[in-house]
Image 1 (cartoon, rainbow, N blue to C red):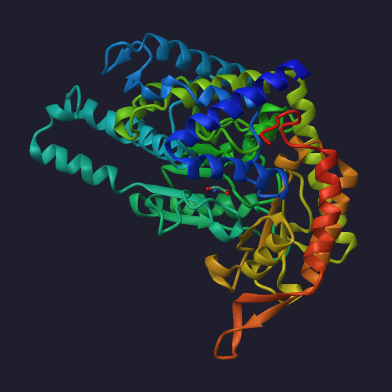
Image 2: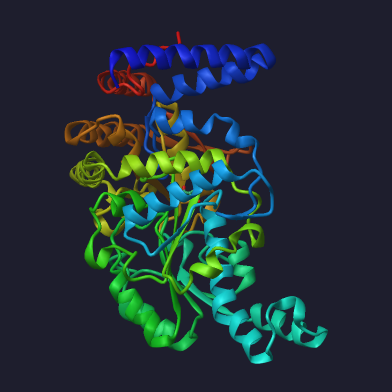
Length: 481
Ligand code: DSN
């Protein structure tokens, strides 16, 4: 951004915050504080990033005020001509970016995108054939008995996905999530020794369970997936392959994952968030083949509330950014930096799930330091390092305390961190963990939450981070002082 534009943007933000402060000063204050916190800490949450100012600014407009349930040219409200422009453009950019036959840009989040995908697959694979058999045009034409039998059939389908502790997402059939309640679900894990996906085991499970939907994709698996093989497995058992690429869509867009590692040519339906490695606004998308397009298109109002038109506009801006060659350089750097981080840990004797990474994230098993994930996460936060605790395969500490910490490189790569900085990040994290001890409960027993961080460690680590953070400022030129 040129100096002139930076000055204008700073001034625009300062004035906008004054407008907000005139109504609710505490929100203006929290907004300033959030920028200061994000600027002053090492953000290593694998699912977070920093969207560009163009993306952020696009979200703050009057498109927020418009209702537009339905689809382009087919709305349940009048006056949607400008929303149509926005939605068409966002979908066009998404199709071009990912080489997809069809793109649906309305989902408000990744969970919403997965719900749209589930119901579109159910509509296409179960509802439509049932209606055809009964000679009905839509469900309203069905008699009470036929409707009840269709409802029972819709509720009797099977889904096979990756288990949460192996790195799958809670929407991939985890029992406490709606996906685990909507479907008869089973899950596949990873090899107990290597921590890697074993496609023969997935295939054997699929043959035995015969799912309607095979879900591939992950939130905390530090490796790439062969989607061509997953499609072969799906085809063999008659399943629809749904890939949730929420975490790694930036690496797909940036052409780091190509061929068998690119889900789009292999899956029937692909879902994603738009704010993680893809670096757009918070939201979701669904990509699909022409075959599934009509049922995905029914996402709103079947599953979703009215589209967030201001966010769809920001998606269009973010996708336009991701179509630039610079995004490919960024995505490659995200993967290279994850390698540097993993190597830095390994040299310092840390234990990594799967012994490394080949995507954007590293899953550190902290049990060797005598800590739970929760204790490690809290101690790191004290030292200005923002991470999230995460289960590791076979975790005995459960999903609340966990035994791991998940670390991702997308955000700090956006700030310009490279190999040397991630080497230092590994060093700082290991320093914190080596200097943290598990605490005790009030009654004096072992605690999974409390911890004691060695004196002076947090300040030492913060000083070392400050040097790197100052060298790679967040939103350089944006001065809100
Ligand atoms: N919250 C996202 C993540 O951190 O992976 C997924 O729900």
